[in-house]
Length: 66
Image (cartoon, rainbow, N blue to C red; front, side, top):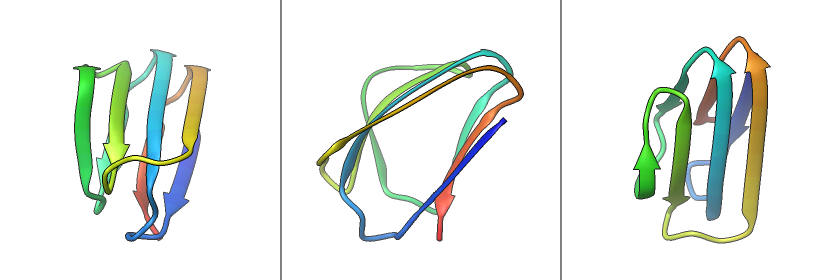
């Protein structure tokens, strides 16, 4: 799996994809930009900023506050 921890005031545009597993966000101000499902997330963090791309096959993706 993938774990990403970001400061709560970070600005980013996030694109996350996982084949087998799920995606969760914890403690961050995420605004959906389009499709959002258990396996796909397109969102802005605090209004957007530099792009962060996360892709995986097995496990899950956790994006949380640091």
